[in-house]
Image (cartoon, rainbow, N blue to C red):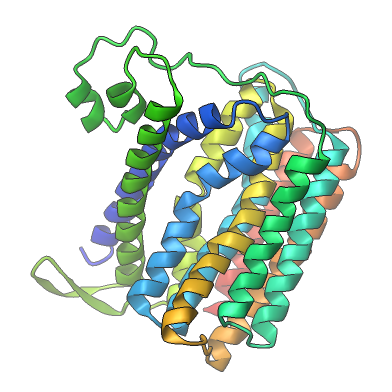
Length: 367
């Protein structure tokens, strides 16, 4: 019973995050419909699908209010970054192969170089901030500014060809009651229905979806906290047994995978449409957003009110080790992407093995 309750909560929150992110994605895709190919995936798609990581990090800091809370947020972001870099490209390849669309996917080398270098720079910045224990408002601001520079480059330096991958094919001919659709978490169907999207209803859909994503992330943080404890109470039930694990370990594996569901679904959709640049740039762009903004903003806001975050030696060592491994895996992933003209099944398998090795590393060296 002790393990079953948080596991059920994690599964439920993952489903709600996934369904809510669908509505968020539709709205953000409409609002960013005029962005060029590759830019949309790395900005609009990446930001919309990374809302769970941002909110989860915020809630870890708000509720735990110390270095342990930061380690939970950092673990979520780092684990999600590994998941995004390896699982999402691999699943995108497997999806197009399974549906008979193609045996490989081809990505613009410019997109790979652009996003990979930006990601590596952001990782180096985070490593240095943690190594020199610079977890203050200024450290958070530096990370946010790095993301601002990346977005500025995206909008003003990349080609301006218009993306044509936006469509409104979902929910055509809706006849179900909107209350039923809402209860099914089909926010697009319940809010938009058969109407055409416009700026006003897109923004409303965005806000409603974000509220449900936020509530789900709040419950996800609570579930991870329960799972990590040796003993906890829930709804009047006392002395329930958890796994007795550091919150950072739970976050880097469980919370990271749960919050990465929207990224995965969105990239697979893009891959099935043939938008391979957006499918991969969404994964890499999500990582840049996660590291620079999903960590930077909570650090900035938290330290303004509570002062600098001071990490104990164990938490500091864990955080640095995970980030260094993430950096190494990112370099290997970059080399896989740029070797050859396409990404096929063999490369997809290598990426999956790398992710499994990362999980093995966490269990072997940090438990």
